[in-house]
Length: 268
Image (cartoon, rainbow, N blue to C red; front, side, top):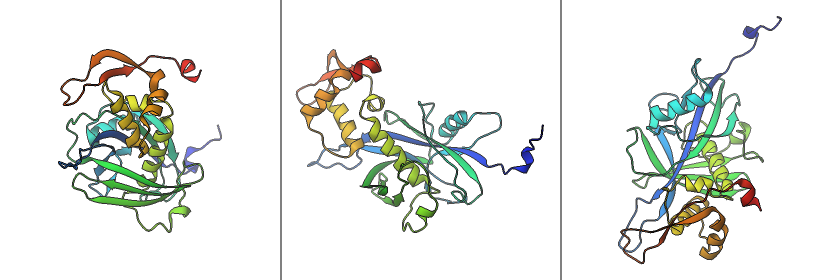
């Protein structure tokens, strides 16, 4: 065999994970009730490069594990979130994206229900706001104390791959590495996935009101939806449980659950 692996550069391989949820806003007043907001799970780095900066949970792949196993392991170690379903977002391999050397990142994204359960001390949820279009975006992440972290992001026409030269003149980046770009990619993917409500269901308990479901959509899409239109669109995917919302201080709403239907039925 003529192949000699030592003749080729060998990059390190890492996994980075974007975890979204919808939770109540931390800001409340007697005049305005808190509203559900889209949030992303981040950690505060404890080492160089980018010491003390915010970043996505992730880390390097070990020889004895698959990259998917790395993603689950690092997510659990760094945030306490255990084994949610992960979807591949993109692979980033541009030389220079990490100052430590040639590092390929396999990026995953997922959504989970917010339960208020404790997470690791170095992890926290940050409210997400995204403005812009046509590959130019402003990503604003806000912590529970109201502090904002702003990043200017430019993406390729496919909204997929990191472009080193396109990032050279970006004035603001509040996250480590290219993690702002990864979050924007993941949010755009999440928004496009809401043509069908499967991701939205995973951010809710098994039984929910139609208002709960609409609020998840509005938090992710960052716009108000017309109730009648939304309920007509969502009707094929939900069914009544026969129960009503308990403990409500207003007229109780019906509780629904997701309907078990095939993809063929939803496309008809």
